[in-house]
Image (cartoon, rainbow, N blue to C red; front, side, top):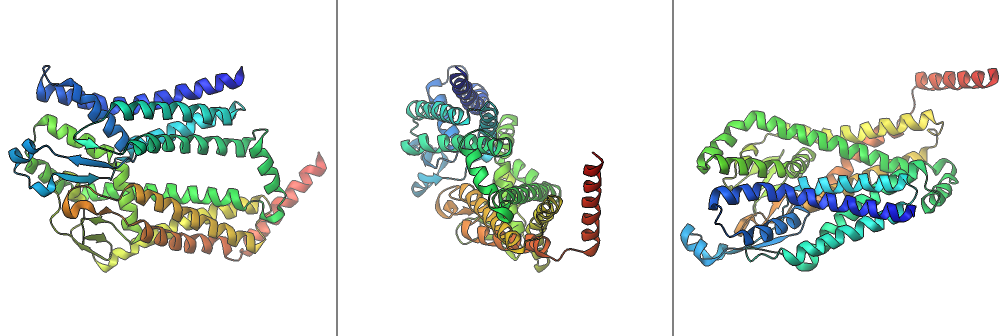
Length: 419
């Protein structure tokens, strides 16, 4: 009965996660529909657009097909009638991922995480199938298989990550414990897997924070440009509100772009363009207000920003080294070297996946290329984190640190004798 209850609760979590994401899109779109078209509007078009945007927010690429009447009314060239849209707003994707991780952790704490992961994945997949079959739009088109598989894969990844992490640290009495026991038998190599993942998590968190700070700093420095673009758009209060909500949904995407700029490779805003610390080459940029944050010029001194990923790697190395020393496992050189390589490789892998999500097409023509390139970003992050983490992990230990460790161990031994 307990396993059935875990599966049902996991399915309920999946339904809540999907409902919240859909509601976050339906609510503002419904308000826009009412204020723009009135109560006599064609409500049949609202759900297909909302459902397709929900899929897009989970990473499903879209093809925008503009109707001929709209082309003639807005004087849009015929070659811009069809174009791809593949840079999603990551806010809803991150919510789904974190909500799924919470559900997976709860399933693992109940002692039946495999059932919980399976139940949640099946439920979210069923919802994805329902949305994909009912939300077909002539204006926004996507591949049916991608509309089903991609959102379900995002939720399944979150479930699995949350469940395995909790099971690894707290135990599950099953397969994770067996793997944990095998790893524990590796002696001085036992900390390598867990500390590599832990270090990569520290790096990713630190880089995300630094990227957010970068966006905030550019908002302070170039907020006037954003306001000017809002004014140039000549939108009313409703239009300004919708633009602002769109910007907020894309905020995690801009954070990844900011991290790519800090790491050195930068990002593109169209074919043949580049925005990086080494220089900025831009052509005609779309009049989207948030793009006013993009720096117009760059100097060679901005290359000092590559020290940010190095510092993130150093922070991870310091935290890992401190833990290993405290546990009496910080003396072996080669395990520490492998941990450094693992942290760098995992950080580079996460950077590559993030770049794949936030790069692609944002419009017709030259706008088919935007965002950071996955390969250069992964290579830059990997090398910079390797340097920072290696410095802290592989440097010789100071004699004061060794003396303090000996003192701590002597106190622990004396306390054990007294007991």
